[in-house]
Length: 145
Image 1 (cartoon, helix red, strand yellow):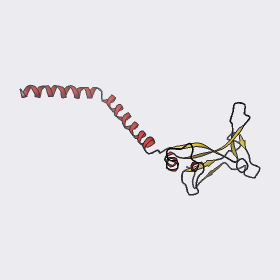
Image 2 (cartoon, helix red, strand yellow; image 1 turned 45 degrees about the vertical axis):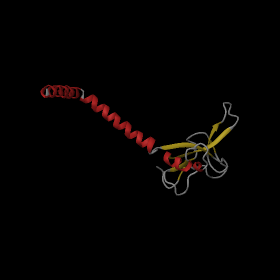
Image 3 (cartoon, rainbow, N blue to C red; image 1 turned 180 degrees about the vertical axis):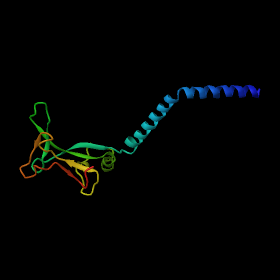
Image 4 (tube, rainbow, N blue to C red; image 1 turned 30 degrees about the vertical axis):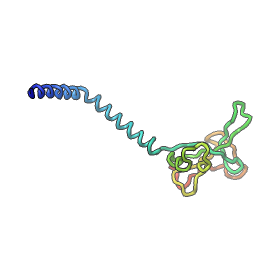
């Protein structure tokens, strides 16, 4: 009886190993895809380790702001600047309610990986201030990443 069981186990093992040898490339690709997907899920979803760029209100009297139309006929314009920072920092500042968070609309002086981008004439339609700040391209706090 034990020899029959050993023979069946050997046949199953032999067929399994033959199947693996024939499909080694397929199993390797599947394993690599699972590992890459897991690493990206951990980085982007769990850690929030990516940069987010969003619009913030901009005062056209003091800064060179981007201009966008609020409606299709362009009767009303919207002045804005672009803020770039890491997603996990936004979640720490605002919690779950990111859309109504006022503390995310500016960069602190000592904050790393946060930058405010103002418009220059080459990058798009601008609302230029009356002061001498027309040459401002990007103001980076501490470092530009």
